[in-house]
Every structure is written in structure tokens, then in C-alpha cells.
Image 1 (cartoon, helix red, strand yellow):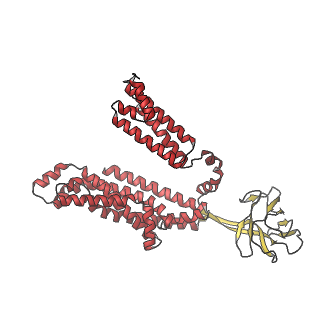
Image 2 (cartoon, rainbow, N blue to C red; image 1 turned 90 degrees about the horizontal axis):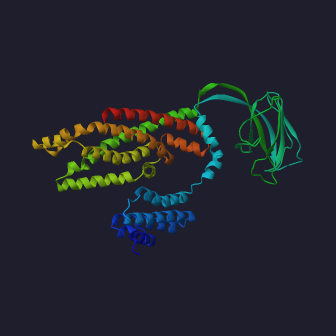
Image 3 (tube, helix red, strand yellow; image 1 turned 120 degrees about the vertical axis):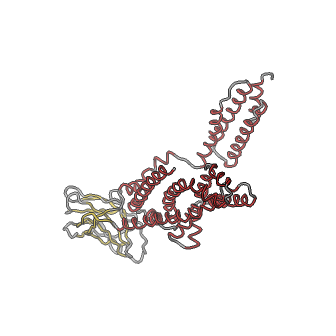
Length: 455
């Protein structure tokens, strides 16, 4: 085969990157070969679907085309080659992470309670007194199941088609004499006092009677434990609003205000202590200050290693360790945030030192000043403004981090948010989320203004 382009393409068809290497583009060929081998290894190891092999085939073909262009003296399409090599990687990532857009849209109704909670946060509420129309319902039947009626305090009556049965059975429920379009809730109370909602008209939400003040529907007896030889009375209650006060601040809103203050203080303490401890690390971690002396170089590498190790561990993991160490509460969160702040600010501080103007330092050193005097008069005046800006920005970050740390017992608003989400108290969770968002926005504006003035 005398055609060099065809020969290079054949080499790359057999072994990706071989044609490029043969044409003198060794680095390019080696990169293609390594990436292809990684992709093949991932596909075989993860045992993925044929779609991954299709993506690999596209990358392989692009490699052959690239070898053809290079060997033929044409300009290679590097951007297209990069996209072709990235395609199978994204296909692998899509499959490994189980991305399912169909499920995303078809299951959107599950997020409805959460969205409603966000749109109606529990900051204000009316104090409500409920009127109750109740019927006893026995599980199982001690006698023939008869219809039973009860009267509510407002004169309305509620009739249930049978007064006993088994879980899963359907009974008829009829009401009349309520105020037109009045809102009712249906509750089930077992013999030990545990309450739960009952579906009516297919929903757990409150429902309205018709314009004549009546309703008629079927309900399913909830799944409750019972003893076949020991019938016990449960209570089926229709509750309606008898009276309500004006809007007042809720107890959940007070809890949110208290814990959001705890979150801000937690982030403030972690930022203050972390910034103080980050300063010596940053001085030892600045290459331009630690050069020229073997002992100083040792300090440089030790400082950099410590900061890299601390920064590589997420604050959430640190919080779990400190919760075990000092117990639940904001103190564990402060310790976790402080450790991460030392590493993060130490790196930013040291990089700002490395980018300073060396002129003043050389002038001070020429006067015979020692290392401490050089830092005090030549370094600190140049780095104090960016250090302040970095510290304020880190406080903003720590407020957001402290929210997540609360999920593992690190105190703050995140602790309440985790509890409310587990209990499906989405309105209370919505109040916490809105409070977090407002605080973060305010702190972000403050941080941006400070950095704008100082940097």
C-alpha cells in the first residue's frame, strides 16, 4: 500500500493512535491510545449496554479519520476528534448514573408536596379551633354492621353505612347540614390515640361540601392492626373549622429564626478561628518566602501537605467525625468548618502572597532586615486587602456549608431541615429553605461589595 494516508488510517484502525504515531505525532497518538484503552476498560468492567460500544465506535472512526488527515498533509480537526473521544465517556456516565428522563417527567407528581411547601412556607398561620363530627368504627365487627349517624356541634349530621368492618373494605359516608362549600378534613384515630389522614375523593387533602352543605362518597378502611377475637373501637372524624384567629407568627417560624442565627454564628466562629490559623500556614506555604533555605523549604512542603490533606476531606465527613468526638450540636459543626476553612483560606492566602510585587521585599531585604521584618513591612501591607475579601467570601461559603453539616447533627438550621423533611413537614421545611436563601443572598451581596472595594 503506497498511499501514506491510507496506511496511517489502517494502522489507527488496528490500534488507535498508531497512525498518528507513525506520522510523527507521537504525543497525539499516545493520548488517543490511552483514552481509547480507558474507554474500552470501563465498558468491559461495567458491563454496559450496546450504546456504549456505539459511542466507542464513533471515537474509533474519528481516530482513523484523524490519522488519514495527518498522513495526507491536511489540517487535523482536533475539536471534532475531542468531541468524538468525549462521546463514549458521556454515554458511560449517562448509563452509570442511571439517568432516566422519562421517570423524571412521569414522577413529577411526587414532588408536588415539596413544591407546595416551598410556595406556602410556614411563617404565618391562623390559630384554628376545629369542630368534630365523629363515628365509632370497630375492627373487626362485634355484631352486625349497621348504619350509624352522629351530629356535629353546628347541627350537621354524618352517616356511615356500617359501624364495623375490616381494613380494605369500602364504606359509604354521607354528610348534610354543613355550611355551603365548607372545608372538611377526614381523620382516623386508633384505640391508642394515633391519628392519620383518610383518603376522600381519592386525596388526602381537605375537601369541600357542595353548595347545599352536603356530600356523599366512599372511603376505604385504613390498614390497621386488629385482633380477630377482640373488637376495638376506632374513631372516624370529620373536622371542620369552627373559628380562626388573625395571622400570627408560627412556632416553626420562631424555630427557624433561632436556628438561622445559630447557623450564622456557627459560620462566623469557624471563619474567624480558621482565618487566624490559616495565616501562619499561608506564610509557610508561600514559595517566594520559603525559598533559599533548606529549613524553610521543609516548612513549605509540610504546610502545603497539611493544607492539601485538610482541603481534600469534605466538611460533611469532618462533621461526622466531630459529632462522634464532641457530640451533637453546633460545636461539632464549628470544628468541622474550622478545619476546612484553615486549608481553604491558607491556600488562597499563600497564593496571594506568591503574586505580590517583589520590589518592596527586595528593598527591605537590602537594608539587612530579618525574615520577620520583611513579612511585617513588605508582605502584609500588600496582602491584607485580598485576605479580608477572601475571609468575607469564606464566611458566605461557611453559612451554606453549615446548612448541610446540620444534616449529620452539626447544629444550625440544617438540623431542623433534616428533621422536617424526614417527617414530610414540607411547609416547615419550606420556611427553613427560604430563610437560608435570604441569608445567603444578603451575605453574597455583602461579600461582593467588600471584594469590589478591596481587590
